[in-house]
Amino acid sequence: MLVLGLDPGVALTGYGLVECGRSLRAVAYNFIATPSELDHASRLKLLYDELSFILAHYQPQQVAVEEIFFNKNARTAMAVGQARGVALLAAVQNGAKVFEYSPMQVKKAVTGSGRAEKGQVQFMVRAILGLASIPQPDDVADALALAICHCHCGIRPEGYL
Image (cartoon, rainbow, N blue to C red; front, side, top):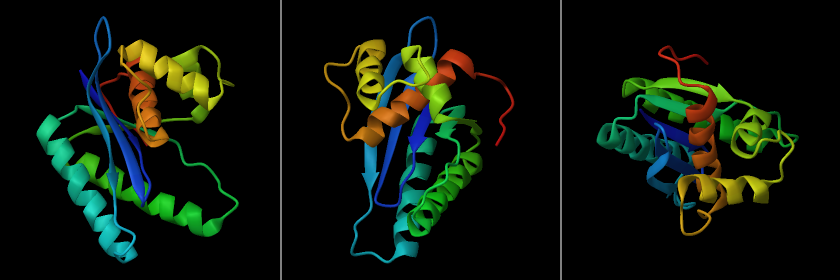
């Protein structure tokens, strides 16, 4: 099964496609950057278009995203929430089921500890997928960690939000 992990943001969205099976294989991973010169709505549209292309091209059956978290900065939280909404819409409109995981679930699935540091998660993403180096920027490694988490503990036929 092919799983797409997403770490959505307006400026930068990380994505990682992982083939789940007896072993895990990174199929593709990268990021989508939206130009800061664009107005906010245009950046969200660009994000939607890029994600829709990735979803149509690779056709993952399931998508893993991080659960909503609360941020002290309301403006940042709203922007991330909007990017997340665009990502969820693109996934569902392209026939993928969506699954959510808490940061603690992701850390535990990838490192064995729900309290692991970011560097430990990144190291294990590289090791589990047999990559030559840790994916950069952090959003890409986070997206791959979400896909790994789903492969390890979440594959189900039905999606949920």
